[in-house]
Image 1 (spheres, rainbow, N blue to C red):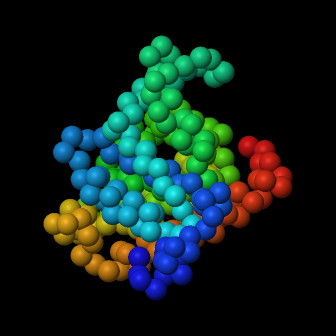
Image 2: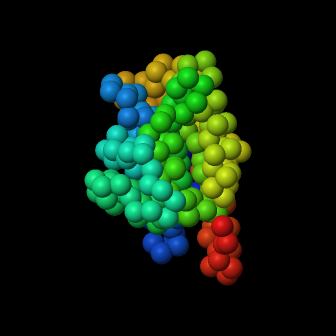
Length: 211
């Protein structure tokens, strides 16, 4: 973020802890040798510097959710309790989400779809922002697929995204971005996310959302 951003932490003037918005940053790639940690570390840095947000990194590579779902209103399959305990309470506690995703075959990774499908109310009336990376498309086709899926789950997706086209060449050896425009885009996106998260959290406090 720029040093002059009004929402960047400075001089200890952070919002009171109870007013800060909880953001679950979901790292979607589980591929061996993945590039995701580089992109996620950069995104997490922006979240940590934002004066209104507190972040929790939910790395799907560390949470092996099965793709076999239980019957409607049925108990989870045997052996899934540990994985669900590692993710479900964190999604439920979040006021907003940032999804860091690559693009696989014009869409997003299967583990991310599993994480979405294992949950329902956890997504309701919460804003979602995207940081994507890939080849020539920068992961934007994955993002567009996610918009439709998350709309079905009553989420509000941010118009502005951050996308890295040819992502492997967009970062330097220290994990910083080579183009300052990416930092500026992250500032705008997270400011929008914070606005929506405050608006939706405040609205739900007055009138619970009926999903």
